[in-house]
Image (cartoon, rainbow, N blue to C red; front, side, top):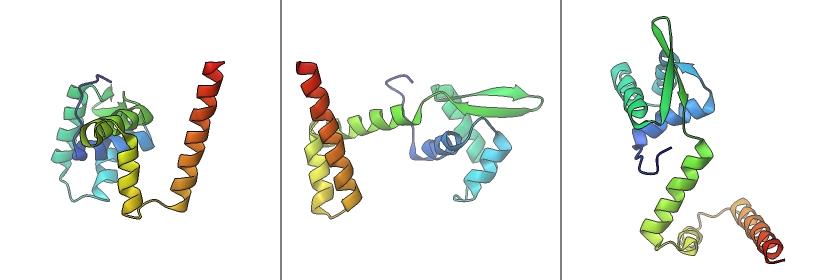
Length: 131
């Protein structure tokens, strides 16, 4: 995925459908998206076209139908976007983001345990690289 790609919230809805299962025919994508959004079929197809133009998804033509699939990995996209958010809003300091969630009590016990595991794994990797 190009580093300068900008995906709107609406386009992300389409990508989420494709990350869930792909390739998918455009008609199936429309049906899935319309279960949670009051969007017209033409709007969804426009979003598909925009994502193709941005290089985020591609398609194979199957007769008169199109089967779409993502070109960008979900985890890679999430990592890129979260890094951008931390850089833009917290001057690159992840602790500011986590602190904000903690102060608003939006961290569950599961979140805290997961963060502890991530930090422990990171510390272990640092010790191994120092050896």
